[in-house]
Length: 251
Ligand SMILES: NC(=O)c1ccc[n+]([C@@H]2O[C@H](COP(=O)([O-])OP(=O)(O)OC[C@H]3O[C@@H](n4cnc5c(N)ncnc54)[C@H](O)[C@@H]3O)[C@@H](O)[C@H]2O)c1
Picture 1 (cartoon, rainbow, N blue to C red):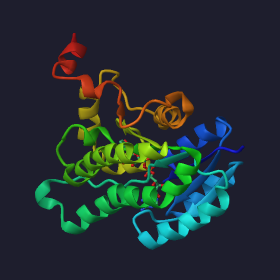
Picture 2: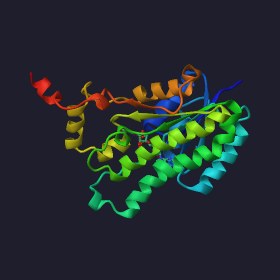
Picture 3: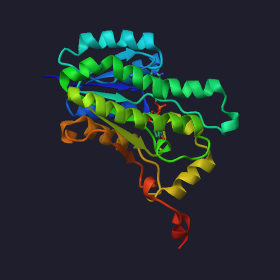
């Protein structure tokens, strides 16, 4: 039996690294993205993938995608990784409603829509959901009123899914990455922000796409068969820190 995962935002960054981890596990992957050119380029390099163009924030696009997945997922869907996301950083006073909606519609609405549409396929395989949150959803930092709030909502959505969909044998967990040098992050991480992350991370470095993807692969696999409703930070120790690291490093 072929095990099938679906990864949203799979054309680059953490989603592409996750696709590679699933392929190494021997699974097939439905790669979903709204950037057609990037999706075509990324999927052309890989065997065992099914690229589908889809905007996760658009209910019609999601409905069409779910129908297409129905033709591929004859044994159901073993994993859904809700990874597609966008970031916008700015002070509360400068965040206009269009920015707020843009962030919410992909990071939160998209996750709700895709999961709802694919739940029958997940139930068929007693599959697992892994939602990609962020450390910004666990602790508030400046400039992240839209992004951080969307990710905090993802954590709550994950628990809702775990509680309700457990009856169908579906597990739902979230991974909250620390900073990773992807296109999304580098568009919003100024030098000040990069320095601030180093000051707050015991391992004193950014993570890699692969380090996040390995944890996603674990949570999606049967190795995590009794884990559900959890938010797992993959953050170099960010969540454990208080003050004092810069002083420690000076000594
Ligand atoms: N990079 C980081 O530092 C970091 C930290 C914490 C959390 N995250 C989260 O990880 C996830 C992946 O981010 P990344 O850093 O790999 O970014 P990225 O920009 O490299 O990749 C995001 C992918 O999602 C796709 N996408 C965006 N909007 C979409 C939509 N509406 N429909 C379908 N596809 C869409 C993009 O085309 C792109 O291929 C995001 O949810 C992000 O919030 C990233």
